Length: 259
Image 1 (cartoon, rainbow, N blue to C red):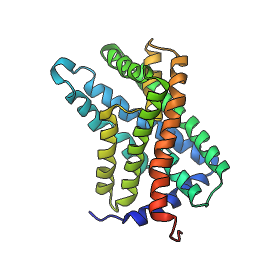
Image 2 (image 1 turned 180 degrees about the vertical axis):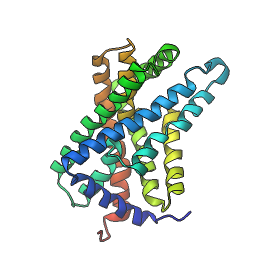
Image 3 (image 1 turned 45 degrees about the vertical axis):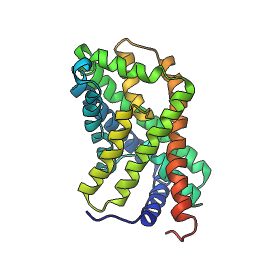
């Protein structure tokens, strides 16, 4: 499978960030909604294939099975199209490090995409998870358990977990940029996403689905969700913008002409 060099990928990421920062508002909102929904579909699939597996029999293999199907969400985003906050935290930040956009453009993009991702994720949680009952009934215990594992973390635990999650998610985006064909992109996306899910790291957009789904099923409160939202959002921002965007910009883009 053909792929681009890291130097080329750094340039592709920077260009992608410029494009994302300059998308019309309407397009950003629609693509953000789709990305939130796609990540929610991945998590919904995870719960449905693992929700009835007895942990005393399957053990950690259950987590691996769920993690193996979850990447379908990011595959949809990156190949079909979507504006995902966590990926933008790397790409748009890369464009800022290269002085191709302004800080205000970063703030605007991240706020708009946060809102639209949330709407898309909650849409799937309500209509498919709650209204159709796909996250409730026999699957509600699993839904509540996974959501509870996110909420129980302290501020700093959730923050550090968020750093780890988006470090891996943005590596998946980076490998997607590196691949020149669809099969290569899917493989590049699958491994990092499977890893972050199996490790139980916290991803802000995934949490936009699983915690509201548990709330709709009668567990936890929106206050619990907000307390979790802040550290995970901040951790994801550091994981994407600094550990991938900045470090690769310093390594490959700072001393070369881009565009």
